[in-house]
Structures are given as C-alpha cells and as structure tokens.
Amino acid sequence: MPPNQPSPLDAPMPNERWKAEPEEQDYPAARSYLSLLVSPDDARRYAKALAKETRLWHYKAKDLLRSSGLALLASDDHELEKDLEKVRNGVKLSPVLLVRGLPLWVADGYHRICASYHIDEDALIACRIVDRLR
Image 1 (cartoon, helix red, strand yellow):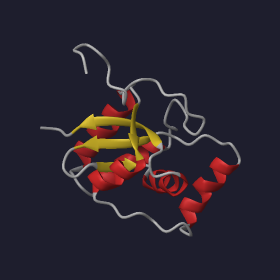
Image 2 (cartoon, rainbow, N blue to C red):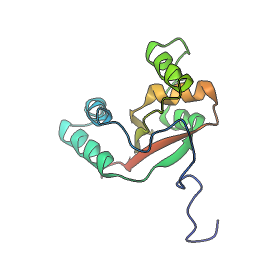
Image 3 (cartoon, rainbow, N blue to C red):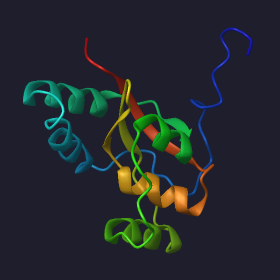
C-alpha cells in the first residue's frame, strides 16, 4: 500500500448491520469485564479511552475470534440469538470494544462477533480499539 494511504480496514464502511457509535451501556460493561483482567483503575482508564476513541475499525469476524483466542458460541446461545434476531429485524448492532494486544481483549461485543460470524465469517465488524496500557 502506498505511504499515507489509509488502510481499507480503517476506511468508512457502508454496512447496514452496525451503528456508528457504541451504546452508552457498552462502556460500563467493558469496564466490568476488564476489571477481571486488570486493576479497577486500569479498567476505568480503558473504558474512558474507548469512549474517547472516535475511529471505527473494521475486522473480519473470524480474525477477531482467532486473535482473541475465544471460541465461537453455538447459534443457540441466548444472547447470540437476541443479536441474530436484531439483524433479521434490521436493527443495527453496536460496534464492539477491543483492547489491542496478545491476546486481543474483547471488552464488549463477544456475542455480536459470534452472531456476525454465524451470518458470514468474513463479515466486517465495526470496532473501537485502543492499545494496552504500558
């Protein structure tokens, strides 16, 4: 790719499945989950950083699962079924919240990733992502 050219992954994507902004309840959910991995203060910092981040990245469902090490949920999972129903009804899903590192942390949106995978493993998922604290 020529220098100074945006990556196709960070370009705006026309996608009827994803909202442009995460929902407000996603940040406390991310903070709660992250507090299991890091201190409560660091979890709060990550949640704040995710809320401040404005760029949407787009990654394939299969790549998000692989980089996170998370297993694909069965299609009969209750929360996953709710997300699939939203998609069937034309309701847009909230972008997922991620923390970059090895492994990738899915701070919020695991069920949405799995639902998208069940529809199309190559589907591009809207994401907000921040780097790990140093």
